[in-house]
Length: 298
Image 1 (tube, rainbow, N blue to C red):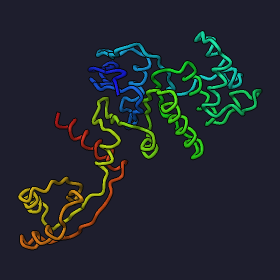
Image 2 (image 1 turned 90 degrees about the vertical axis):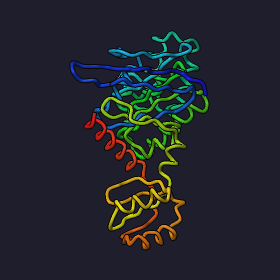
Image 3 (image 1 turned 60 degrees about the horizontal axis):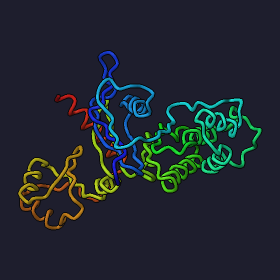
Image 4 (image 1 turned 90 degrees about the horizontal axis):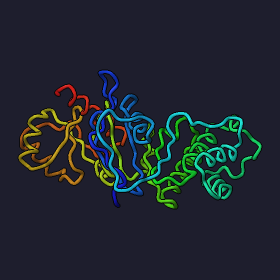
């Protein structure tokens, strides 16, 4: 993949607060990137900067070539008294698109609104239909880069499935680069290629879907009556570990029987040992906790 755009030390400051704090990362052409963070992490501010709605206080966005942007940020700006087709005609006229009718019909089909009653007004649409129409408006000129802010918020399971299929179609058939902000981690796992984790205006971590799967693979959990002595033992045996509450987390390929024999030899009593796969939500919350600890030390 080649790079579509690169952010370098991007910052947005309101009075004494930095909503976006020296963020740097790149987005590759054709990838679906998930932006994850709690409320107030700076996600929407960042998306508004990327979409050109607001200017950064400092920092730059680089690209090797011009690119078109489509965006759905916060509430969709629909014309309530127009139909789906009417809304798209309104946007098409603003964009000066040629072959408007053909493009509108194709776009309605992409988002699954081609069968909607042509006389039905947008104000009478369901939430899912409004979201699909908003995406249709954002992709009408087939942008290179599509920005979606919480596109599945409030949707029922069928609506979430439809939105997922639309996103995947846009990437697979139109090679759109897509940046999605969402709180629904389980849904992001089904569509994204890479994650960017934000916390308090900063990027905590970036990792690919493959790297995340490696982080979340099944691991060995160990609890003993003397964790400090156990850690010393593991270090002597060159066994890597992480700590979580009263447990030590070891690689799943650890030789369990050999480790138990060593614990017995060192007279360390075993309290619990089991395999467990880490959930994305737990991993994300752990990253946030580590970010808080880092902020307290800095």
